[in-house]
Length: 148
Image 1 (cartoon, rainbow, N blue to C red):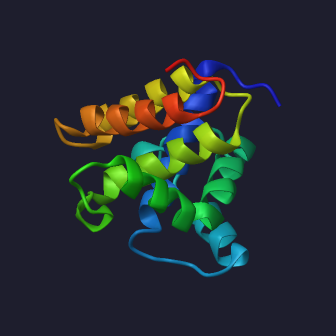
Image 2: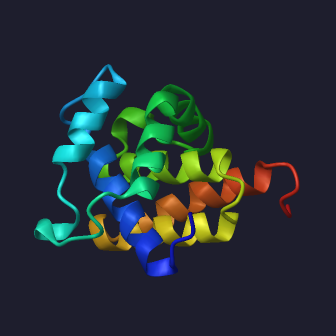
């Protein structure tokens, strides 16, 4: 499946919104996750991102079962911040981006980081983008084959 840059950005935005909503209405089954996905809006204020969005679903379905491991990575790289103190917006962005960074090698790290920073600019506060960038850059540099 090949999507253009704009479509992939929209899919990431939808995936972020669903992961963010999981902070308010957790689910314990993939069926529950699927229902939440199907009921989610397709964009800001109901704008259509693409109806059936396989890439967004792939990101949500991929990140969701790894929340504990992803949260441990966030804890490891977020110096002087307990995971419980990190805002829900930032956690959703980090969960999405770390899933893609660690489990989707076909997407370059610089693209993952840039897309996460763009989400942080749009949905986070003024410090979110720097916090997100710092954690993701540190994790990316720690991966085998990445420049130190």
